[in-house]
Amino acid sequence: MREAVTPESVTPEQPVIYASELVLPVSGPAIRDGAVLVRDGRISSIGTISDLERDNPNAEVRRFPHQTIVPGAVNVHAHLGFRRGDGPEGGPFSKWLAALIERLPEKEAWTAEAARNSAREAVEAGTTFMAESSPYGECLPQLAESGMVGTVYAEFFPHDIGDGTPEGAVDFIFEEARKLREGLPERVDCAVSVHSTYTVDPESSRLAARRSREMGWRLAVHISESPEEVEFVRNGTGGLTAIFGSNEWGGTGLSPVLYAENIELLSPGTIAAHLATEVSEEDIGVLARTGTAAAHCPRSNDFLDCGVSPVPRMIERGVRVGIGTDGLWSSPSLNVFEEALFAVDLHGFDGATGLELATIGGARALGVGDETGSLEAGKWADLAVVDVAPSGSEPERQILEAAADGGVVATVAGGRLIYNRDEG
Ligand SMILES: [Zn+2]
Image 1 (tube, rainbow, N blue to C red):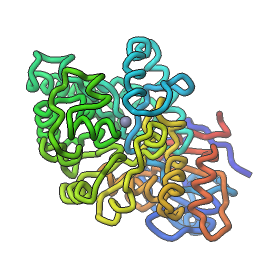
Image 2: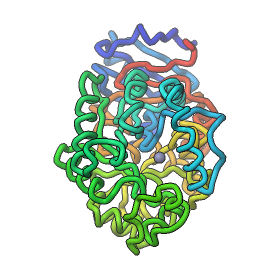
Image 3: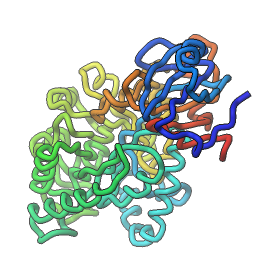
Image 4: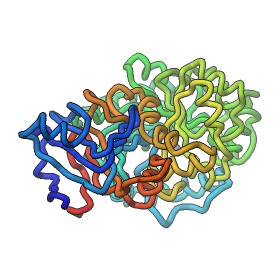
């Protein structure tokens, strides 16, 4: 029998034991009849149900007897402000982007509602930590109210703001981000994104990256996402030139990764999204040397004809990689576990690698690997309960499959139960 669980009945101050048939910490061996003791929002200890119950007789026990507890999913690259079902057709990328831009005026009316629904969908798919990118941080309220934690990266488009200079544009977006950071829930914050190599000029990019480092903020950027981006940066021609005719800084003769390094975008605080098209061994070497992290979004890359990111080589060479879903106009869902399962099949990974990428890999990519991404004493109690009690030789794959198929029954972020399927 599962005990009744209501979001209101759980407060971070009250010690709670989450117990299930299997606990899979990711950072250590699986525990049969396992349990996680949560105190003040953090994992106080982890072990068997009988041990934790004996040692903590006053704790409230939440039982999920036929389920598995795993770390909450970490989405390292998402856009909340899109909705399912009416997006532009898929690739080629520049055709999709042109259609998206045409819809921007109409989209204003429903972006907030889309963001609320997207955030809810992510929570119901077991996501506890999200790195979201949206124009001027417009989806921050919806991330903050969802119960998830994470960072919204405010994208800026220099020609639309400030006094027309790179300095003015960068001053503007950092002032916006500073204001957005006021009054946020614990563990939710805002930083700045340089949207891409083809939308933000080199000087604005450089200044924004420098300022981010000075502030100790991470930086999100799309890099080497599409064949058209490679063509723009290298030759100054192609489908993106047709869209952004006045952006004249292309034609550098460089790959997008080398160009990004030249304009100082790459550092250990940088999350480079996609890296899907023509990422060479030299590029991977630059990513590794600069400590840049990668957001792998394979379903978006597939939908937009962008190629396959060389993730196995990146991992081999020490690049930190996490999983991103992108948004609902380029991806079928905001389910990180489903995205990770796609990556597993795409690259021939085992299930354990997939589950790691979806959790601790993402946390490390975002620089929060000491705080979340695995079930360990001292970390925040960010976890998901999946409706499967795996029995085979590859439990992690069974968990990914169940979670990909709507099998998340509860989500806990910072010790707060933010989703419980039984309660609707
Ligand atoms: Zn994106």
